[in-house]
Every structure is written in structure tokens, then in C-alpha cells.
Length: 362
Image (tube, rainbow, N blue to C red; front, side, top):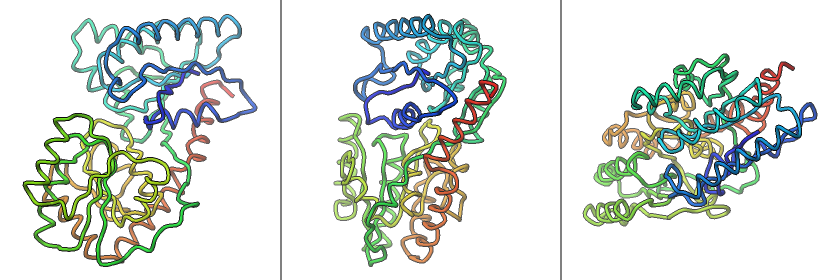
């Protein structure tokens, strides 16, 4: 097993750490840690230290193979960036010779889009590296289309899952006169932060009593300056609060005091964890009908789906929930029920075990 386990800020690492820690009596696991980046800003970029780490990882795989036969080799390819793709190509070409069964787990989305942007030589090399893969694991049904370019023998859908932290939280009573909207995500264009800001301008014209609390890291000074300037120019300080990145107790306190969760994303991602967290916490979700998100949220049931980059449609959906507490409660309850039936960590690990057993012929 080769698992991406970068620092704890990375949602993908949390999911794969669950997998590494899980004990199954029917198999032995050998974990080779793929820790290429020490900080968020390093992810997707090049450095000579990453080259050194790559060859060290390949050496560890070789030593593991010499000690014991590898029946199933598990590897999580990176997202749609050239440097990580080159690393994946080198890794797969090297390690495939050590196991007849290779399982690729696509946590990141959008790799197929990158493949189509490559030049002819790059595409040939990429297809050769990904050739003869036994099993491709994707997170949601829509994402099956993203692995068609290399024709894996089997495609298995195993949704991500998270621990039911909400079961141990004390949620404040929701339903006062001030509706609180929570945004959680990195503050960049693709996560829809500026679409949300434009929607807040529209909401301000209709309502006096609402709050938008924005949790997340500002990745660049340019984006941070642009956000703060927009808030100042549109006099939004009374309605919108920038919380910065939060974790642990502080993070869950924000979920507990919120009435509505909003993520107007158009990022190339597979399955936003923050949406799962909102469903777990019984929050109605307003998000986009984008990529695989409709496999998570049914429009009108667990929340509302809107078009990407459509601040008017976003404001309209938020208005419906601001005005109707009963609808918020009903949709939040439906979201939690769906979380419990489909997106818990136990469901995820059960699905992963079944996929590994099938790959191993058990």
C-alpha cells in the first residue's frame, strides 16, 4: 500500500490515514508514506527535495518487494497538475512490475482534463504508465467518466466517509431571528468565494438580519486584498465575518451555530469534504450542480443546487432558507439521514475492503 499522507491540513491525507490504520485479518499491509509536500503552498509544484523523496519512496517499494511478494499494490494518483502527473508516471512505471494487481484510488478530480491538454508524446507516456490497471476506485458515480481514458479492467465506486463527530457535539438551538450562513473552504476563485460575496450584496438589499461566516485559508495576498476591498466597498462588514482557518473545537463550534451551509464551488475536485461535514451536522446545503456534487446533494431535498458563477441564483436559494426555518430543519434532517446511510467512515472502509478483496480474488 502506498498512501498519500501529507500534513494534517490535507483532507485527502485524513481519508487515507483511516485506511492505513484499519486492521483487516485477511491481509497484511505494508505502508509506504508518500509525503512530498510539507506545506499547502508546495502541493502541485516542483522542488529538488521532491525528486529526492520520490527516489527514496521507490527504493522503499523495492526493499518491500524483496522481503515479501506484493499481491495488490494500492496507489492514489494526484490531481490535474503536470508535475504530480510526471511523478505518478515514474512511480507507476516502476512499481507495476512488482504486482500483477494494481488498485488506483482517485481522491483528486480532473486528471482526465489534464490528459487531454498534454502534447502527443506526453499522452502516449501517460497512457502507457496507466495501462493494465486492475481496479480504479472513484468516489462518486459521475466520476467514472474520469477514468475512461486509460480503460481500467474494473471501476468501483466507494464514496469518502468521515467520522460522525456530530454525534458527540452539543449543538446550539438554531432558529433565532438572525440566520447564519457558513462557508468552509480555501478562499480562492474556484471555491466560489467571490460568487458568495456578490450574493451577499443582493441579500443585504432584502434582509437586515443574517450573517455569513467564512472559514478558510486565504492562499494569496492578492486574493486576500481583493476580498477585503470588496467587503469594504460594499459595506458588508456588518453581515460577513472572515474567520480564517479553524480546526478542532473552534471549527465544530462554527458548524453548531450555523443555520445554512454554502459552497458555490466550481473547483476541479472529486468530493468536497466540507459538504459531508455540513450534512453530518444537519445543515441544509446550498452548493453548485457541478461535477459529482449532484451525487451527494439532491436539489430540493438536502439543500439546493445552483448554476456555477450565478450569484443571482445563489442569492435566491439562500433567501428561501433564510425565510423558512422549517425548510432548513427539514433539509438538514434529510442531509444527516443521507450522511448516515452513505457517507460515514464505516461505510467507506467497508467499501474499500470489498474493493481490495475483489482485486485480490478473495
